Length: 268
Image (cartoon, rainbow, N blue to C red; front, side, top):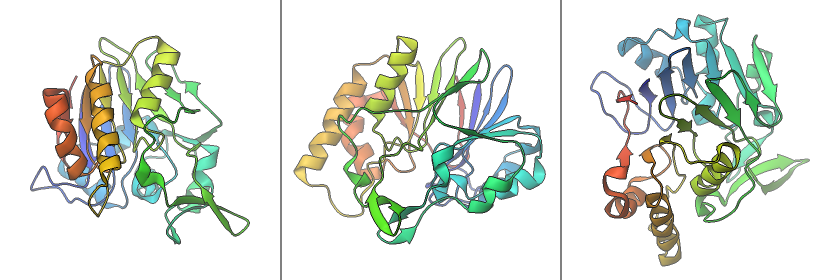
């Protein structure tokens, strides 16, 4: 299995553009998959520079309803009319951060070959999607301020629009976008469904903060790392995890946690 990071917040290749966003291309035995599309058409240009032919993608997955994961989707559809795009129905709700709209371009709803989900689905024996993550242990504090607007009122986003991709094979892979529901709660849901933890997980941890952490916030991050360290799982992370969080977690997780960058190739 091969993964190529098409878009991420940090530069890992001089030929790549980078910005706040995430997009990962995956080749499995049976599929070519696009997981998220970054914040803009820069993702499409990166794919071309990295030799990734997005016209051959058969499955696209939107991890949740935020612009930095969906902004390249219209450009992707222009070059690929056939791939089935999977997203939660709730991805098209109105999402805001500190009064700024951060949701999906509503015209994406009109694209062909979109499957709107209300929960999980098994696509075939190799790939599946799950949602309905209800746990709240070590819930990311950086979620505070992320809202869903309903009838003019901003309500705390509970991230029912978040979904995760599972790829089953010789090694089992979990891919999340930002893990707004908390990476531990996502892994608990995975274990509930599959009675084990994945061999590899690729996900942001949504711990990024522009200011310094409070001691309580830092302790939650360290405790999350200790919990992840107990699993026989390799974690690839970046995007919304934040450099400060990575520096707190790395001494605990050591080689079990690998930071991703634009243009990076991962072989599983």
